[in-house]
Each structure stands twice: as C-alpha cells, then as structure tokens.
Image (cartoon, rainbow, N blue to C red; front, top):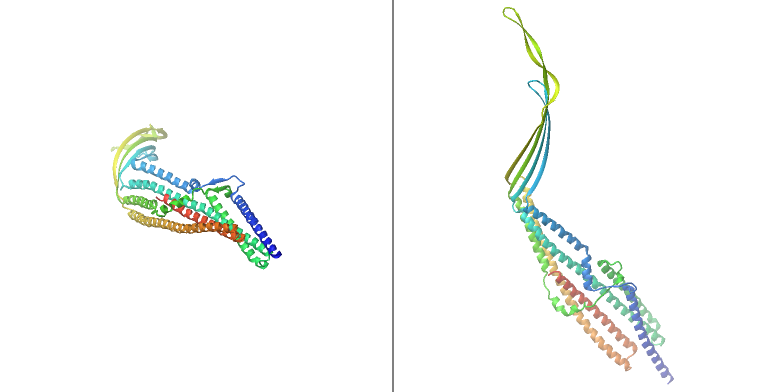
Length: 493
C-alpha cells in the first residue's frame, strides 16, 4: 500500500513537473524567439519596414543600370537631332585663303632688277545639298528612330530582371527565417526530450547511459541552428546590398498581403508568352535592316546641287632701280676721203636708286552654281564588304533574338512548373497541418481525461508545430513562385 502510494505520489509529481516544464518551455521558446528576432532584425535600432512592392520600387529607383539606359536615351536623342539637321539642311562651308608672292626679275632693256610683291585674299562660301545619295541619310534616320523604341523595350526587360532578382532576394530572407524557425522547433523538441529523459532517469525508469544519444542529437541541431542563422544573415545582407542599405539589421520585411496571390494561382499558372521579348527582337531586326539599306546606298551615285560665292582681294606693289642722267658717248669715224668725223650718242646712266610704283588694289566678286553627279569607282570592294558585314550582322541578330525568346519562354515554363510543384506541396502540407491540428485537440482531450501522459501530449504538440512550420514554408515557397511569374509576366507583356 505504501509502495503504490509512493508510486502515485511520484507519478503526480512527474505530471506536475512536466506540466510546469511545458509552460516553462513555452515561455522560454517565446523569449528565445523574441530575443532572436531582436538580434537578427535589430529591434534596438530604428526600423524601416519594406513590403515586396516597396522593395521592387526602391530597387528600380536606385539601380545604376537604369541610369545607364537613360544615358542611351540621351545619346539617341542627340543622334536623331543631328540626323534631322543632316538630312533636311544643306552643307554650308566658308573658307579664306591668303596668298603671298615675292618675286625679283631683270628688265631685259635696262638689265636692272625689278622687285614685285603680290598679295591675294580669296574668300568663298559654298552651299551644297544632296539631292540623291541612295537614301543613306533617310534610312540611317529611320534606324535611329527605331533604336529609341528598342531602348524603351530594353529598359522594360531590364526592369524585369531587377524585379526578379529583388523578388528572389526578398523571399530568400523569408525562407531563411522559416528554416531557422524549423530548426528552432526541432531544437526545442530535443531539449524537451532530453529533459523528459532526465526525469525518467531520476525516476529510475531509463538507464543513464542512453542519454548520450540525446546529447548527440542536440549538438547536431545546435549546429543546424548556427548554419540557419548564418544563412539568414547572408540573405539579409544580399537584400540590404540590393536596396543599398548600409546595415541589414535596420529594416524588416512586411509580409502583409503576399499570400493573397495564392487565391489566383490558376490565373498565373495559365499565363503564356513573352510579348516584349518577341517585339524587341523584331524591332532590333527592323533597325538593323534600315542600317543595311543605308549601307547599300553607298553603291548609288550621289547627286548634289551647290552654289559658291567668291570674293578676291588682290594688291600688288613694284619697285625697280630707275634711270636718270645722260652722258654723250663719242663715236669717231673716217670718211672715204680720209677725213676724221666725230659723232656723239646720248646714253642713260643707271643710278640704282629705289623708286616704288603706286600699289594696285583690285576686288573681284564671282558667283557660281553647280550640279554634281559623283559615282564611286575606287573603293567599291570595300563598300561591298561593308554590305556583306551588315548582312552577317542581320543574321546574327535574327539568331540572337530567337534564342532570347526561347530562353524567356523556357524560363516562364520553368517558373510555372516549379509553381505547380509548390502548389501540390502546399495542399499536402495544409492537409497534414489540419490532421495534426485535429490530433492535437484529441490528445488534449485524452490528456485531460488522464488517458495519455504529458510526454505523449508534448510529442503530439511538437508534431503539430512541425507541421505548421512545414505548411508555412510550403505556403511561402508557393507565394514566391507565383510572385516570380507575376513579375515576369507584368514586365514581359
């Protein structure tokens, strides 16, 4: 009688201890979760809360690749303006030529040096307008206009890639948190098991040597917890770098509304096509075809109409060594009769003194108009080679566009396949979670009736907790897959 009374008292004591332990474990779990959240999410610092849409908008605003795309737009606008001026306005050029000429010559009559300097200034204005050049400028201009549409589609697809990376980083943080919660749940279960086993050892119901197995399991789960914490920190760091946050612990993620997409899963699983990728390939090919037609225009003759206005200012100065003074030069002759005759001939003597002549200034104006037809003869081989290169560029672009379209379609199909698998897992884990919830209610009733022990009740509750974490994990995985499809489809069509 005393033995049964002692056993009953010990059993009641164990039940009381286990009930207090369950309460203590629940409070300890809540405290550890709050402490973990405070450490990981920085509760002691000023918090910034971001939803998925906030992360998408913020990443699109600060990404440098979009700024580079805007520079492309600016350069294209300048090219279009320059093309307009070159296509509809004539070529106007002005030139000024200065000619200086210094010359010395000998007068054939006097054998004196004559210095003559000339100065000519020639100014001209040429106006030329290409009447026909094989439509080179027109096709090049159309290619630039098409490039602007190409850049707009490239910007949309660039936003799509940024949004996909942001969505993946956002859900990677949430998935890491759920994985950490799953490890924490298993760790708390191991702590409960080892504490329960200690009570059984104290009661003499289990051998103490078997406790080492619980210790090994506990050590493995502590290692998993450390790895899960490291993975969560890496995920938060990746998202913080994407959002250009200096400290990843100063922002939290708002998950409100991200699971409402599951109700519309059938809509996103039926989405088809990547319209912008297909249109981008077509526009790129059109722009390349315009450039090809522009290069082909090199084989055509060029007809240009021009006009020229010339102004010629001419000035000249001369300087010679003049002649002054006169001497008689005697000439002596003999007549037939032998008589001597003396005659004198006047001769001008040079004095070699400078005597400048008056400068002469002349101004001439002339106008001319011309019609020029030029046909390339030399270098036609290089022109044919340029055309062949442009043809190869067209073929390369066609293959590249087809590959891009196929890759986008395959990626969308992969997203949809992953979403279907996640949807099936979601339904299975939800069913398992509902079953464990009912089992927990039944176990609670049986425990209150004294049909099961507190240890058995804790096992049922821990299974329910594990099923709940798995359900949350499957739900998050499904939501992430559906949001990827949503982002891909919104920026692709």
